[in-house]
Image 1 (cartoon, rainbow, N blue to C red):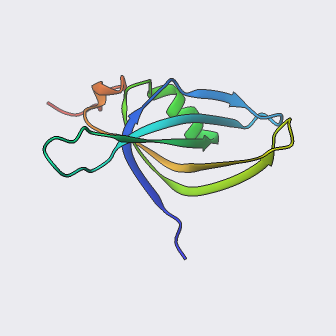
Image 2: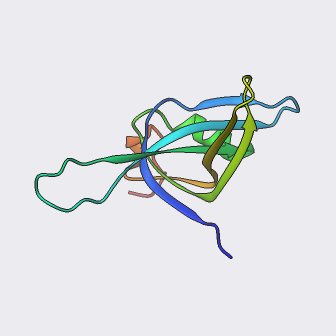
Length: 118
């Protein structure tokens, strides 16, 4: 069985980087992915997909990506549940990112340009 997700979209807000109690880096962010549509008079709509990155990937995404930047995410879809303060069962579905890549020119993300010979 395969659980693999590939997303290409734009970050909807700044990355939320934090540390766990044991010092592990974790970053939370949302990616807006345009939906395909048919028909000439339909507006473009998007899905807003919550993503989480851990350890080095969390540090990388928080360092080089900002709100509005295009981004490519590869990972696994995960669903979790918990009881809130009122005892209500809550659910979250998110992509656990294991690969994060730039989309488009490096300057679009503020990343350093690759060094090459002229």
